[in-house]
Amino acid sequence: MKGYPVSQKLAILIILIPALFTALSPGLQKKFIITKASPYITKYNQFYRYLTFQLFPNLYESDILLCFVIFYLLQPLERCFGSKKYLSIIICLIFYNIILTGGIHLLWCKLLLNKIHNTNEDLNTDYGVGLPTGLISTLLGLLHFVKKYVPIKYNWEFKLGSTATTNNNSITNVIIFNDQFYLNVMYFLLILNNLSTSFFMFSSWCIGVLLDVGILPGMNWRIPILFNDDSNKTRRNLITRASSLNNTHYQPEEEEEDDDDEHNAEPPRPLAVQVLNTLNNS
Image (cartoon, rainbow, N blue to C red; front, side):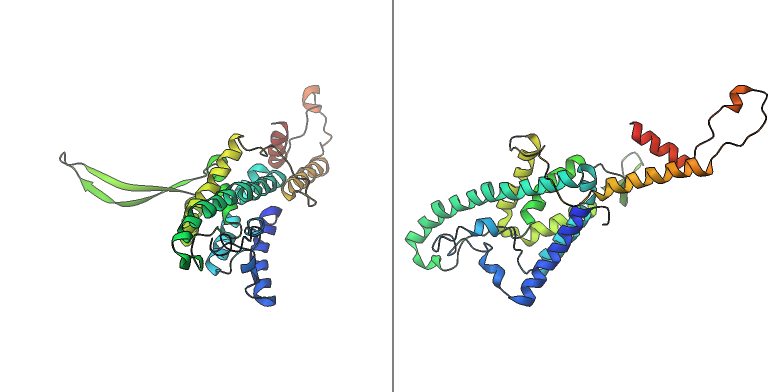
């Protein structure tokens, strides 16, 4: 993950923050997330949780591991957009999840749950669906961008066997997978692990779609980050190194040529230099 600074730092934070909570103050993060709508929202009116439910992950090891693996698999998306735009999209998704997903949840709590509580006060102790904790909502929004902008590199087939037909021909049953199969499995396990909040995860995915099509502003916004884009830096280093090799090791030899055109011809360039020059001119 050396050339992907955003993915690297997010993966470290996903592991580091729960570890710090566990070591310093176990259970403290439960004061900032929304695991249940009641009594935190409906009775105690702790609306500050809508600002912090994405910043403090729950201490479920499976969710932490799945988020870590998914961010690792989203490196092609950072390479596609660049580190600055990739981080800007993540910040926009976090902001719109606070406004829209949190707003839908608050409206649901106040309108629906309050009516239920008026008929049965005992339900006010522990009732209602919470919101996805940590960066799960952000990952659901990034799923749309992965499917739209990251190209599929290869496909592979899984043959189930052959089926005989009436014309004495056989049809081979084949299931086709692509290189995003492992990513799809990780997303499926993440959704299955938080099935009670599936409606709000779907709203997070819709936020990603609305952000991409331009209904929600922020797609063309760039955040000025302090760290450098290592991918562009690595590419510049390769170009500089190839240019130095071209100037040092491929000097034309002085030979007596009868033909002036052959004597003044440019020396052959290495293949790496030709490829890099082609990328720079495109």
